[in-house]
Length: 181
Image (cartoon, helix red, strand yellow):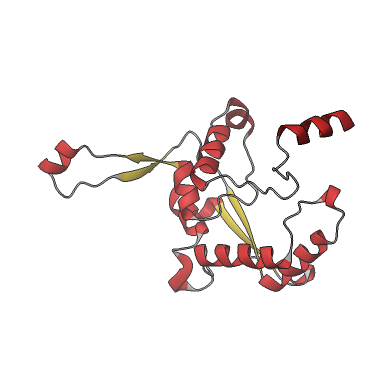
């Protein structure tokens, strides 16, 4: 191991691998998830996505295929537009989503942050949590309010597989206060 560390540093002494935090572009991440869901293992055994899709756009790119109307057809009928159609081959049969109050999530993030680095990811600082929750809340406004419900990720799945096949589980600040709307 020591020989490996020495040779690695000789190859690229300016690169500090401890501070490098690479992130995949969203479109690449979506393609990877879609390819994995299309794999024989997922087709035969099913799949569980944890923390993804994060918003309606992610879900649409993974579970729907765009049907592009040709320019020739658009000239014949200007009302024709490109549309998305559900890819029935990979569409989930059921969707269970968990939502929680920010206070509960913040408490859980602090608990994870207190774990040794070997048992957790290193991205559980309070600032990183606040950034991620803000992005999520912007993409998925509170679905309990009717004026925001259609923008929530759950509404996408209601439209795709039906409301009876979707469940939203709300977690309160105390586990004993869990509720299902």
